[in-house]
Image 1 (tube, rainbow, N blue to C red):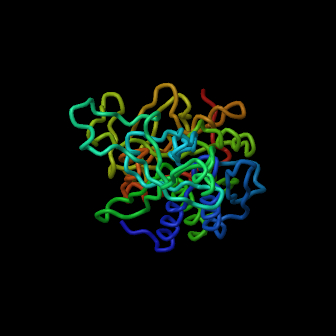
Image 2 (cartoon, rainbow, N blue to C red; image 1 turned 90 degrees about the vertical axis):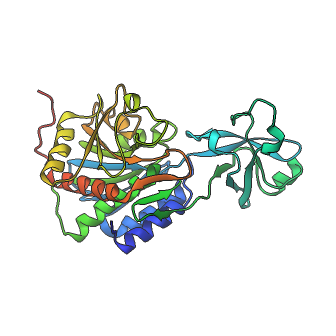
Image 3 (cartoon, helix red, strand yellow; image 1 turned 45 degrees about the horizontal axis):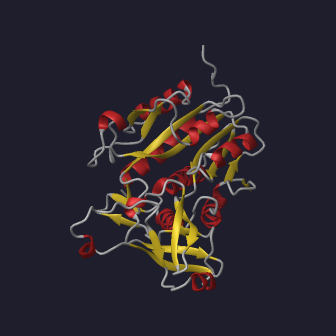
Length: 357
């Protein structure tokens, strides 16, 4: 699967730029720089959600949305010996932390550290310890709390992993935080295609990259009230359930390489979902189905439940190893999500019948 060189260059830079929840501004700057030529206007709200607008004067508004933040850690406690204990910023997985290199975003810039762990030799003949929030710790080479603070590290500093983007077997993109900056990439590509293919649309299109999804969908909740859209199409990631130790009876049957995943859920509007499925069938885009019981757990819920109810739908990208530093997505799936959103947008009209009957 081949992508435009400029698109891949943007994707790599965007993924490699830290964008932890609450501190998404550096990643958002990269994203805005890329979409600027493809939109008529760019706006940023008070908490950092960015959106590019095509036809900003139009009354009928359609949102295509992803979230920009990545999971991370906060410095929570510094011992007298200079070790750092953490709390989550989003759904960070403590089981993968031991032996990982980290970037501590201190007041004097980035400081490298490592999540330490007792050597295997010292754990013989005892119950194997399990990584927990209470026992994982970061060593930044300091021997005292004073030395840690002289490095510019204090309680409240955010911590990210430095693992960078690469392609694997010409089939997968691999990186930390593909959840969900790959979504930001895909909606940006929709904007690019509309511009370069000289497509005109009879409504305002808001290409929206929201903050703070990982801690409660807060960015989407705020920006939905600001934009007040008529329709929202959200893209996020979902689990590739073909990987080991995942129960399909519980998590469903979705896999990388089989196409975008169209969700069925109470917050997903029937008309928008069926428009997406009809588009996939008409344009011969492979797709998968998935169901969510109470909520989708994505920004779809925030948009759907805003402003008295906004017709919303979710197109997900299958992903392996979510919330690790080696998240994987199929390049073919990425291309097909872009195509499905693009073709669906071209079918939307302000005259669409959106109310149930």
